[in-house]
Amino acid sequence: MTLTEDRPIFQQIAEQLEEAILSGAYPEESQVPSITEYSVQYRINPATALKGINLLVDAGLLYKKRGVGMFVASGAQEKLRQSRRERFYQDYVQRMVREARNLGLTDQELRALLERGMEEDGH
Image 1: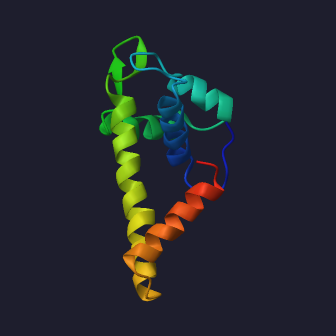
Image 2: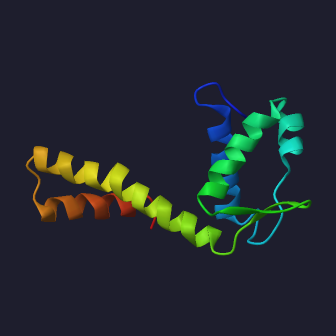
C-alpha cells in the first residue's frame, strides 16, 4: 500500500483497510495490523493511524479486543458492500440519470446505452 498527498493520510488508511476487508484479504474475525505497525510502515504519527482505524471502528467494521488488537467485525464485508452500493447509486446512477434527462434521452435510450456499455466491457 502506498499513501499519496491528495487526501488526508488517516482517510487513506481507512480506505485501504476497507478494500482489504471487501476483497477478503482480512476476513471477518481476523486481526488487522496494529497502530504501531501502521505508524512504522508508513512513518506516520500513531495518532494518525489510530484516527484512520477509528473511522472503521465507528462504522462498525472493526472492533478492539483489549490487550490483543483490532479485528474485523462479523458482517463487515456485507456492510461495506451495501455502503458502497448506496454510494455508487448516489455518485454515479443519480448523476447519470440527471445528465440523461438534460440530454433529452428517453428511458429506453438510456437502457440501450447501459447495455452497450456492459457489452463492450465483456459482460
